[in-house]
Each structure stands twice: as structure tokens, then as C-alpha cells.
Image (cartoon, rainbow, N blue to C red; front, side, top):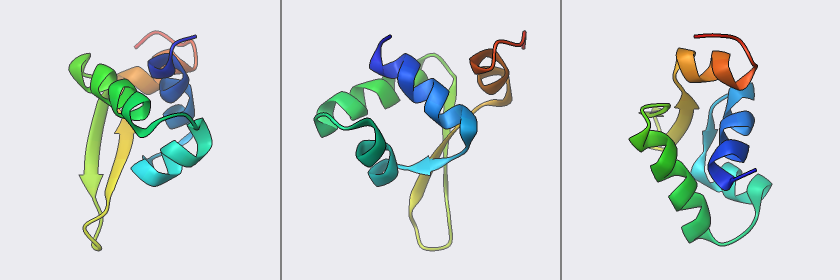
Length: 72
């Protein structure tokens, strides 16, 4: 399983900020950044900002359905 695949499964549970993703996934920040970039390039990941200007990452509805094994 690649880091992007692991991140997809993690974000299928719910949106997380980058620090939370790094804490759960471990490894180097550059590896996490690469997984985020991969999912964004595939159109599976979007980010939203909350009122504190913190960025949260979440899957698109289609990617979330696929992460759980359902067709989009």
C-alpha cells in the first residue's frame, strides 16, 4: 500500500489537518506532502479552511465512496 492509498483510507473516516495526518501516518513531512499532492492531482482530495485559518484535508464524495469499496 502506498502512502497515498493509506492517506485515502485515513481521510475516508473524516477530514484532518496536516499535523494530524503527519502524527497518524508518521514518516517524513515530505512523504506526507507527496501523498497529499498525489491525491490532489488525481482530483480525490480537497482542502477547506476553518475560522482559525487552519487547513483541513478531506476526500471528495466519489473518492470516499471508492475508499470504502463502493462505486462512485
